[in-house]
Image (cartoon, rainbow, N blue to C red; front, side):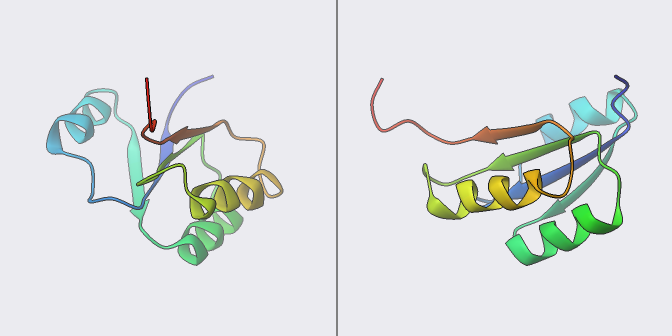
Length: 86
């Protein structure tokens, strides 16, 4: 699989420039949004190679988004959420 286009959905602030620069080195186009409805609209209209969801907590919002997006695409989904304990 070649990674060309990535959707980044974040509940926290946008990722730091280091993360973005790493994808730039790979020539990956990044679309980003903080809104669930916007993320779903984008998945319906665009073929993404990877979807990354960065949640503030192990939130219902993040899991809901992953569930809804899975119904629309077979692209891999990575959910990043902090753990409450190690």
